[in-house]
Amino acid sequence: MAFRSLGRQWTVWKAAWEAESGQPPNRAVPEGPAAEFLPEALDLQHRPTSPIGPALLVTMLIISVALACWTLLVRIDSVTAAHGKVVRSGDSKPMHSSESGVVRTVYVQDGQTVKQGDVLIELEGTRTLEERDRISKEYRAIQVEAARLRALIEHQTTLKAPPDGDADEIRFQQQLLRDQLTQHQAKIAAAQQLVNERRTTMGQTKETLLRGKAALAVETARAEQSKKLVEHGVGAKADFLQAESRRLEKFEEVSRLQKQLEQDRAALVEAEQEAHALVWNFRKTKQAELSALEAKAASLAQEATKAERNIGLQQVRSPMDGVVHQLAVQAVGTVVTPAQQLLMVVPPDQSVEVEAHVELSDVGMVHTGQPVEVKINALQSASHSTIRGYVLKGPDDAPSVKNVEPVSPVRVRLDRATIREGNTEVTLAPGTVVMVEIKTGPRRMIDYLLEPLRQSGNERVREWNDFVHAVRGFLDRRQLS
Image (cartoon, rainbow, N blue to C red; front, side):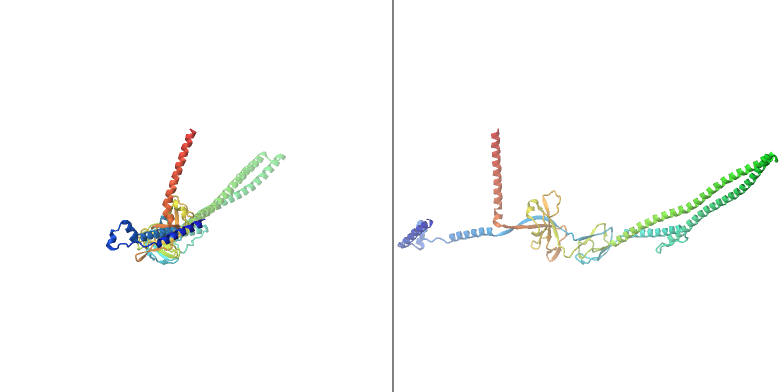
């Protein structure tokens, strides 16, 4: 039915066109100055209109259609901005001084390529040298003293001095060895003399006891014989009593000599024990002194090794192949403090990293691997102050940072570590403030243009919903009351 209606309209339009074309032409239209005085209706009918208006209208229509198509087809990059600073990577090796000292020689300069083990800087630490000399001198003195104690323990008159011992110390310890050995030998001789004297006394007492026992046996026999004579009535009782008295005297003398012999034997044992104790205590005391000296010598040996290592640390050597950066000392004689950073060795193929912080509202759009453009705030030239890179660690896999600000850390790896400023290449130093622009993805232009309207509409809808909920709540409270 629709096609029938269109066909009827086409027939009517065609007939009207033929009727219009068959009419005779209008009367002549004035031309020239006379055309200026035509009525407005005739002027509009017979005078041709200017083509500027339709052309402008068509041009604006074409431009509007082109802009509409452009906003629908063209996509732009959505960028998230974050502030940050250049940081050194974990592969960089900062070199520090182990103690205070004075720079003696600087073998490198900033930007120089070095190999592992190369000497970079030599320091002169006076305190370390003095400490090493003191420990070495004390260690040699202890070695000589230990040699004296070993000679005393072995009862040798000459000590075996170490070859690097001090001559004056060796002479002193040798003289001390002789004096102590003479004194000890005198004590041993006195103790041995006491033992000999008590052994002689005991021998004399033993001989006297033997004579006393023999005399006692004789007196006992005489007393028994006198007793038998008295019992048979042959001998006088006075002789018996006299013989018995002499026997009792000899018996008491023998008893006294036996007690004396026991005392002499105990005194001899005591003297022998004292002599043995003198030797044993002397050996024990000297052995304890030797053990203490050996322990002290071992401790000093460790301190000497540490001192030598500290002296070796005065030579700052490169821990790896790389390039010297941030050389803090340039002139000989510069005083350095303990733990002061002297320079940094960076691997030749190492990239520079940037630590930036994005707002929590943009965390969901930032991911690892996204392209990045980093702008150096300190450089004035905008054409050369941009370095490309990519997100190395996004907010999802970056370590958490306790911070009161609503931001999340992001680690960015740069494609190069230098930037051109004028005619020179400038190396990015740690701490340089930068602006990081993270490309989070493409976005249509129409979405970008309509985003404010969409946000405004969402806010209006949210406000209307809040108003409706408030009215409903008010009505519910009115019904309940």
